[in-house]
Amino acid sequence: MPIFFSNTTSNFRTALHFSLESRHTQGLANCPAIGIEELVYDTHCEDVYEEEIDQRNITFGPRINDANDVKGQRCCIAYEECLVHLARLAVGHRCELADCSARIDISCKTVGTAMLIDWVCENGHKPSSISRWRSQPLVNGMRLGDLTVAANTLYSGNNFRKIQFFFKCINAGCISESSFLRIQRLYAVPSVNEMYSAMQNSALEKFHGHSVIVMGDGRNDSPGHSAMYCTYTVVECESLTILAVVVVDKRHVGKRSTNMEKEALVRAMSIVREAGIKVVEVVTDAHSQIAKYIRTQHPSVKHSFDVWHGAKNLCKKLNKASTPAKCSHLRPWIRDIVDHFWYCCQHCDGSLIKLQGLWKGVLHHVRGVHEWYVGDGGPGCCLHEEMPDNQPTGNKEWMTTDSPAFVAMRKVVLDPYLIRTLPHYINFRWE
Image: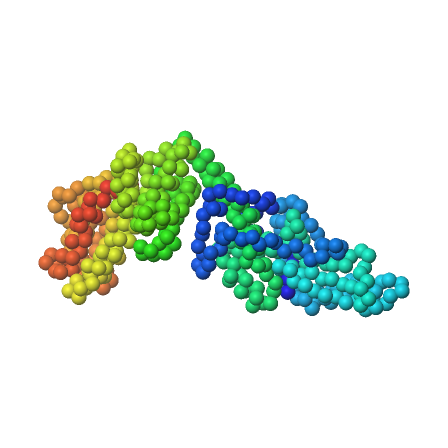
């Protein structure tokens, strides 16, 4: 069962393109990548792509010489029985030679994702014009279906064995794994590299000579300390334009996955600076290695912590503090306390003193005290509307100063590390 292509338009377009020029590449093309279940890239292979069988036969089918002509080609699933019926209508039942009226036999053969249909009479006579039909156009001698299946398997984030199993389930022809790897290595990956480089150069050129605020964050390929790769992305704060994407292998940092994020940031910052972009502020999570690197190597650059990560870590600490049964009264307050932290960072107007005052004010509010002596730089009162009957909302209860829940909460709110890192939140940056 082949897959057909037609030249009509389609609503779906693959965002990436591929070049028909075979070439060897450097960089990403030489780095092994590990898929979910298999090695899907850069595997050495001496496979020779399947050529058309019996090239001496005259084959009918379009050829594509321009890569732009590939765009807009649509495909469909056709069954062998229907193709044979169509071929029978086209070539007839009897041999066209005057002295031969033998029956014409039609045979089908699947090659890759395409189907070849041959016809010859029982006496071995072949038509003088066309004796073979091909279900797919050729692109520089390669079947278009084979090329697009291999390329889009990579572009869509799939792996070959799953795609191959799918084709097997519907009894359709599929390319071999060696052909897939060859197409990926020579056509698909170089095109990804080419497009990525063009997009990155365009983004860097846009901000050349400008002072920018950048945000960066990394993601490992697996949780915990067993990660092998870290992908770090740096974007411009205002336009959210991606300036650099860096992939770090654990083997590049002494096989310690905890060092990958800092190394990735160093490489990303180097790319941005080499492009003539002045970085005035960097926004990251509260990674201790990154904080030390920026503090010691780039003292003139403002380092801000992402408020979302800060609120997330605060929520974890409060949940842990409320775990004991005697501290259960703290649980209904956790969401409000985290929201208060977010509010303080947003409305401190870049003032550390004001941020500290607003933040510490939560210790008064949870006890039902909404006005207090000014001594911590804050406004000396709660900024919310007047509460009827001075009762908290929901299922919360006012705490007392000596209650275990309040003691546990105060320990989190006044945690020395949190207080020491508050200057990193005064600009209210969040990714």
